[in-house]
Length: 82
Image (cartoon, rainbow, N blue to C red; front, side, top):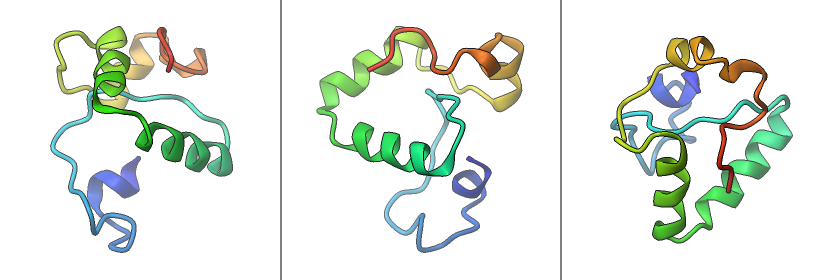
């Protein structure tokens, strides 16, 4: 996530620049994370909106610190899922 946020890898970030983080998942491995990101990218907008609203109805900007404080670190995925 830090790579995305700080735009360290230009190739990875050439298409979109983050505005704010509104949803996150804990995923244990890089391969699993890449697969999940690809899966989410295929979602229609309405499904993406439902996914975010299931855990963050106000679409408030969230931080890694806030995720950890909320008990998210061992949750696997935030409630609601995709």
